[in-house]
Length: 278
Image 1 (spheres, rainbow, N blue to C red):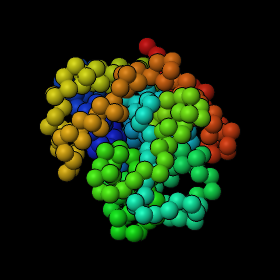
Image 2: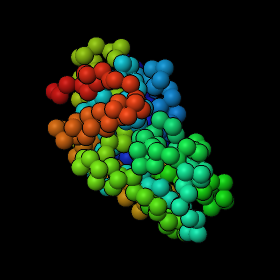
Image 3: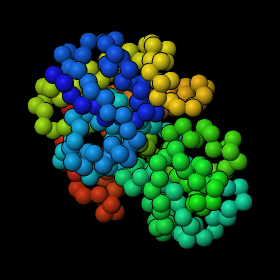
């Protein structure tokens, strides 16, 4: 059975999907067809349920629980992993509500967190996440909301942190921050959904047990990233929650969803949006 699988080119995604894509584990008769795009493009494809399985920002997923269910494996979720708001060294932030802020997508969890921390910041410019640092340096934007590997490189370019939105969330809600998860289309029957979840977990566990096995695949898609940054990225975003959400991970996701609903940012969600544990 062939199924489409959407994920980003970021090292945490290529690291966890390498084994199931390249025959290193038993995929139980499933063949995965990769669709590799940036996270906001995947968020938009999911609005029309275009993919069978996909990486999805939790903010986007909060709008789409009627179309997809969350798998227990594969999530980017934790403490100290949140997006950062950054600026040029000489840019003041005293009137941030009037500044142009580069964001990596309207439906990203990063933008959701920015809306919580700075509700009056309305002048946002949607950009590909990898272009935000240069846009700051060129004066195209005043502030930049960065995700992924950019948190390891912004200081090298003379940029400085304004706010760690992960720390903001953690201090306010005493909860890990859910960034992105892997979801499966509700068109599949429950047995198939569980099979996909099992195979994904095996792929993540294989990656942990054989961390160098995925090197060529990760390197292929990591563009000009140094090997040091590549592995820092993996170490930060791939953790115990990537193997299995567990009770703590589920609580964190419900906290984010309930907060978004209470603020009328997202609609009420389907109660069975997380696949039952096996």
